[in-house]
Length: 599
Image: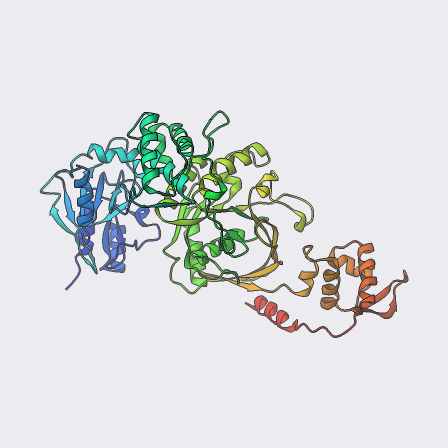
């Protein structure tokens, strides 16, 4: 039987609803930009459904189409509403495979899209600005979407007052299980969270303290001393009731120098002793809950490299030979736009052997918006989608200040990066580098605190390049948790709509030029790669001072690692070579490079 979904889609568009396709029997968008591609243009809509007549029909919610949807999943959602004495108004209603969609008129002042508005996996969401719903006529494997009260049978009711409260952020309320036992290591944090929840109901310090003391006796194992609970109550009272909506596990950092907000004091004996190695996102490269940075000149492919790293992390796959811990990833873009980044994401996914980027890979374009607002949105998105890593591309555009002013840089790390760190989310900052001088000696552009405030820093340098490829060298410039990694290489291959990354070993000449190697290693690598040389030639290849080269050659002669060939130059300096045949097989490296050039 011929599908009529194209007519269904056109009928919604004729009513003024902005339409776009979802994949067959799915809620996943079939267009690159999802709801942002929604339109009422009939020609565009026909083009989509001519590609696949079985595409499901979705409508963008919020201001785009003039309505909001209260999404309630089945019995659980209904029970939560009833338990709170809340009711859904009589309005246009859709039966979904899992529950109900209540269509409501778009409110003055607008409303966004929020998930789990009551916490605890309530199954109650709001679909407003920035959201969409699949509509009747569409089918999932688990069931169909059908009208209970259609657009011809009912009018759109106004959003109830309790729903509008969520517009101001009440959905961020701390989630506290008042029955669970609180063990040592979490007592201060959990009582603080509970106090913040109470702050929206009780105004007085005595009421807050009394409730916290009760919880302390009933739930804490063992209970905290009374004076410790009193200090927690004092910390809670520093917040106005509406501010506690923004508090999760600990007080926020100071908003400015006159803000007297303070963190909660904890005893070391209350903290859980660490076990095992420090958790990482990428082993040795990026650590869980701490910021990292990668920098280089324009054209060094650092953004592509981070796009590739992001997809590896979102899939839990190794990145250039380094183990990763799978987590959802957000790419926070301040330089380009959604069209370009989508193209890159799909090209890199193709190079990895996939049809599309991973489900756990998210994107926000911050270009043209106030950066602090974008970061606040990004933090909410991270919490709602269990995102553990955020790539900031690039910090120079996102800083909202003078990159060379320590005041502005420190403010970013205190106010922005700190808010992500308290949630255990790692920022990986892409940045530009200083001008002039030797490439290896360049630092991140701007204040030294850009490097000081992060825990792992990489420099990427473009090297040999040709038609369809570029070779990169990555240098680990700083790390706080563990040893510096040896310099390593990556090759980037460009083929049609595919971008492929591979780990490559640096050849002897490249290793000889790396200042992270000691002087003796650099001299030996130069001789290994170039054969017999005079001291001044070694100095030129390695970048070492001539006096340093001569001193190292004296030591290496004594150890039997190098020998004089018997040849002298006009200055009387001996030519030197390795004492024995090199055991390294550089033919493989040469073959690899030749294959790259031929690609």
